[in-house]
Length: 155
Image 1: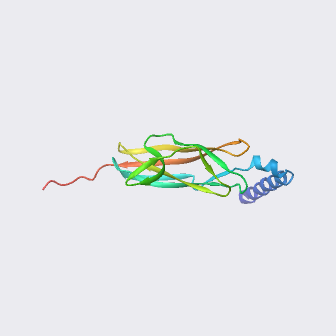
Image 2 (image 1 turned 180 degrees about the vertical axis):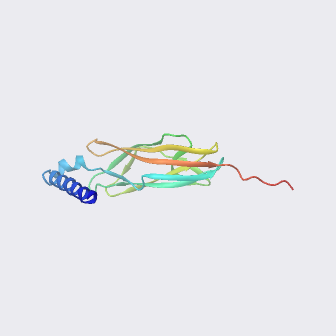
Image 3 (image 1 turned 60 degrees about the vertical axis):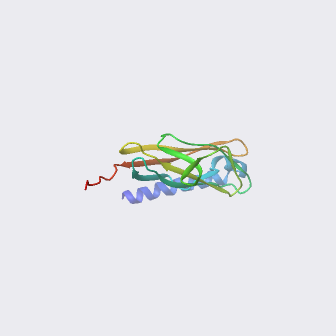
């Protein structure tokens, strides 16, 4: 019975959303729909303390006709660093703002640099705006585990 109730609720919600969007002009729906998509909602890291692990996130402009500006891309915890690219063993800081053309995408590098053993949490915050200056904020949950260094046996 609960499954049937859930299905009915879902059908009503989808029908309402379609009705709302159908009654809107394209300029109305533009303000309702996101302009930016982030490839993941969460990243998990695990690395030995004083080392690093690198992962990427792709930020895509969903609008085919207009540019989107990535105003700021930051981390809420300093053990997670945001970069524009990775070269010669170093994460190069990301310079913003970044303009992403219609249907274009940008790869963002996130490195986890734990200095203490244990669990670390944070958020990747992607702040953008479209050509009409409509702001949008997307979040990626960041979780990292700093592992102790492997013990070596004395000879």
